[in-house]
Image (cartoon, rainbow, N blue to C red; front, side):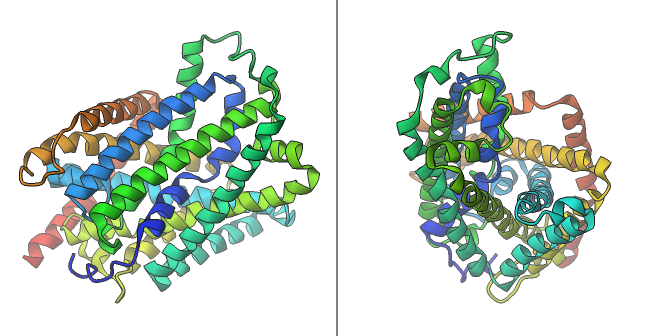
Length: 439
């Protein structure tokens, strides 16, 4: 890994923007409608999810101080449980990245069609535009990881600004009667909270983003820990605060039928002129999330290849440490998925692949938490490698968060997850063979 150790170019704010930008995508703009079908009690579901995410963030922060290595969750699993399990966690995490980038590129074009109706009317144009969006982000990151980081910082600032301004202004228009009844008559309060938890937990995927490019982060132990905790805490506050205000502005039954709840809330507060501006903010939000995941999609296979767990061709990088091969191959794979969606019946399959990648990420979270027990026992000389009461609480909370997320997944999704891990075995054997030949 010495190849990129001299290129530590990410400071606290860019590392934080990776966390914020990769978590805040399309979800915050649409989840309130799904939660409206449950009722205002779903706010408690957000709080439960936020607690679990903060627990995971705390664990990742401590791990980054003790083990400031590039690669993110996979490195913890590998160091604690061996090469094969480490590979499987990294493999699933990588799948999540490029499949999500395909879906996010399509989502970007979907909202762009508000300004360019031709994108709704002709599939080939929407496909070509989706490709353009993905490859612009890819080329920016191919120019250099520094440029990708700058774009991520700018888009994170632009996307979070309206998410703060609109709810703050909306506080003065809240009608407390809109919070009642707190849940639908056909469900219990516990069922409502549990349903909200199942919906909201996906919105926090990406909290570990600052740990992935650790070799490009200045003072990685301290910077990554601060960025992970600060970024996750900031996003949790934005999510919960925004949902509380939206439920106060719009009755739950109306919110449940809204196609653009955040736009509806903004129009209610500021007037109809705000609609196009919010649409632009949504586009910025989506693109910021896309850029962040594109930036990371080459980092994981690059780090794994350096450790002999991926084919050695993934070790190729530019002079400033940009993992060019993995970056481009990931976008090629995402482009193929987008081509598949030209057939309308394939859209649901893409959605399933994204769900599979998300569950694989939750598995990586779970094993990262479990790895703390093994790794900290072997780091007796490091003062940070101690199980304080706070770390015990965070570890248990993070593990429960991950277990409930996996438990809540559909059985069909779990079957695809199993298939995904099996498909990765030949890639693992290829990487091990290359490592053996090199030695």
